[in-house]
Image 1: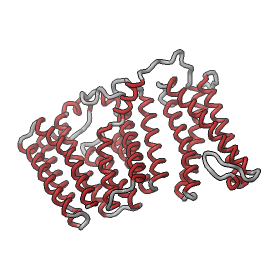
Image 2: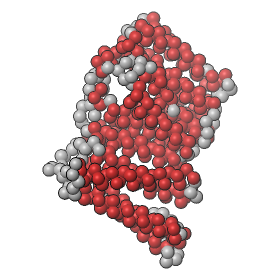
Image 3: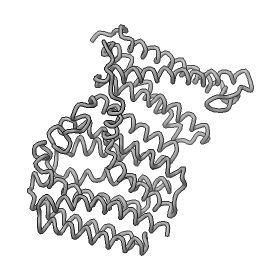
Image 4: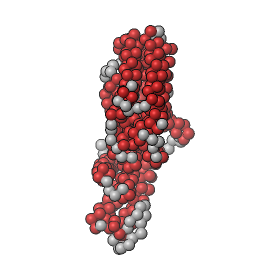
Length: 438
């Protein structure tokens, strides 16, 4: 591998490196001299002493460096779409740069809370590591594009939207908001709701994109997923990875900056659980993939609860358990319908490994356990009559669907169970919300 600055992209990266280095040096001088105290404000300030001009210069350098970062981003997404290292690395570097500036601004308004100070420091370290690697990688890998391919902007936006799995995002946001309302025992403020759901949207969309990046070859073998943007080749693997990493990082900054540390950490744990633990380690390794992996989808209501209260109580863990127990019968019903797809793709779903009859029995057993878990809230006096009646009625409908799967069998009945269980989860969490505010 030979390092070279022949490409315009590598030269632009080097210029960005120089700007960020200058920004860092001036920022350090501002800190050491205490110049920040003589020019208070963001994104601009008015110096009250000569030293204040150092702080003003630092703010100006932030602006100039941001322009350089945007130019690098734009060039990478136009010319390096097929570069599986350069595009994700450039994207992550950009998010870290903006995250550094964002957290720095939030620190000032929040009187420097410890978790933001630590995050600011860790982001600075990560930024310098990624930027240094990017300088080297761009010199080795970057090449000027002979021509920039004209892309259909509308189609690409549609593909990125699909990459986010919007229906799953909506369902996860319902459980997140339910946890937020239940934790607040009232309708939460518009500001808290906005930032919690925005952070949750980024986390769910980012992890969904990363899941599709990991499964892109597997998805080609399944009728249900063969037309996904990465599997079908409408988006490159580098674009999918970059998009997922960017949204996942942004979600943490939003949660940490505008919600609270616990909610941010739980959201990050959910991303790691789904992407690393489930998608990479479990999905193709064990028939218990859905059972164990269900914990990833069960974290959002805990995020909502933590956003409202700053801690986790027994009710939050029961909300986690409801989604955890709901996941296996829901996805096993789909697995029965798509059994040939999963078999062709080599995914050890239960009907593929143990057969449809055993899967139908497990669906019934887990549904009964799910209904029992939903009743823990009123048993521990954590929910009222509205929820109790709703849980019993909804549980009855779901149990009927599971019983038909067990006794009748067949794809049509399994598909009905899959659809009913989706509606069940939405309505049971709606009942939790209504019960909390009446």
